[in-house]
Length: 89
Image (tube, rainbow, N blue to C red; front, side):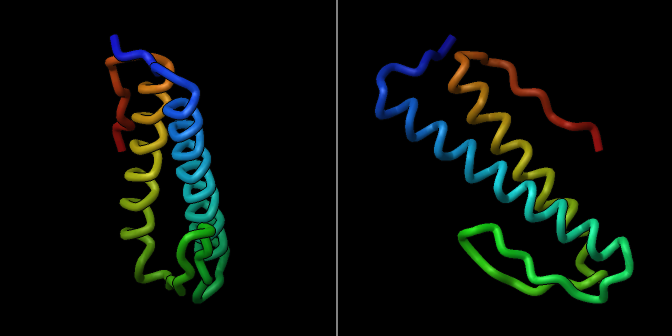
């Protein structure tokens, strides 16, 4: 098992988790808006801003899965867990 070794490393990992969760929320908001009838949506995850359209919903789903995997990987590292659970979609 890999355990977080010091405060600085733990703070860094917690920051990465927070950024991943911010990105997840931004992507979910974009997906919801587009699924509800909007023709475009400005995706702002705090790091980048980009306009997305309904045609890009597949790409949004991929980006969402990647953000979830990233968050789960950092959480596993924080908690010292070697197994990373991946969504099946």
